[in-house]
Length: 421
Image 1 (tube, rainbow, N blue to C red):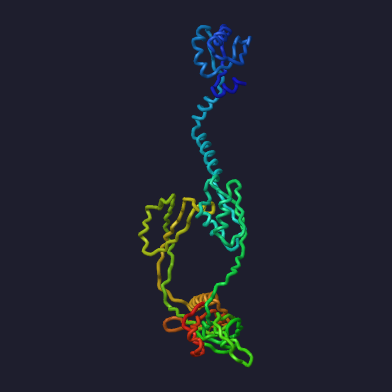
Image 2: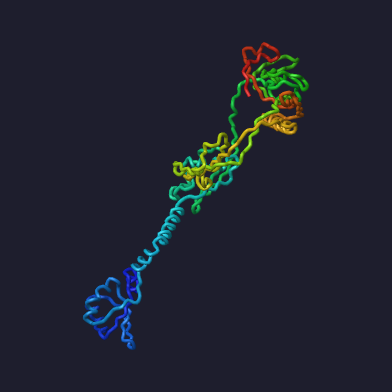
């Protein structure tokens, strides 16, 4: 066993010794400290077989001359011969070594962050937060502090009540629960009156705090007081007992009509793509830009063109710090020709603009009651108009000037000109 293990690392040979002096050859080898093992003698062929260390084989020449024998190598085994074999296939074994090195490096890094349980916070915003705290895809596994990540998230987000951080292999698993914050301390608001943000007709009014100054069906102008912040307390006999300043509360819905107008010239410049495209490729590696393009195509030959850029960070879902970006820029040649809108095209374009206007009004809190678009042909092109009937719950406030509160001015109870929402 010792010869087998030591022989493999030192390298050993299987040799054949021919000649009548083979027995004397074995004795002289032992006298000179040369190890021979697994000795076997073949009487039929008068040949001796044995194993010998590689470095001892070069010491056999004087002994072989004395015994008049000839050692012949039959087989070679051991680490030195493996190295020589590897030198013949150096590229293959280098690739194997590099592969295992890369595998070891990747296994020691974080290559995924899973986040579950969020509803208000998006996964992208949480990943950016973690990236800002040096928790990202590609970081070393040994640098991951699960308890530290958990405590940082608990302290940074007041609406996260529970966080669990677990490391499994090369991935971090984060589970969280969001709590609905209840603000017990109400913000102290200054006294104010609810005023009309639009001119129109009051559809409905429900008063919570303050004194109502209008009723359903009344016509109001913009900035007229709807609910006054001066709350009057009436006692027995309809006597005024006390006045106090409050922030008016209530629900007042006003219906208004807004005029919509739009114009469109009949003639316009029509953009068309010629089909001639040129491409420029850009690779950003560790902040360094490298560009690739066909030098035979001169980008300056296009008088007018659209530049279309596609690409971004590679493997962004794997790591926000991956240092490789790739973009492809397309230079598409365009030309402009004079054209005229047909009646159908003009109506469709004006209708699209009108729909966009209605969407903006809805986003502002208006409820569309009726809206019909009229399109007419004019000398210059087309004109569109409409009377849009809409309703909105009023939320405009005006601060109360307490000094002038006792004097009524234009039905607004002496309100100052400061408006709040």
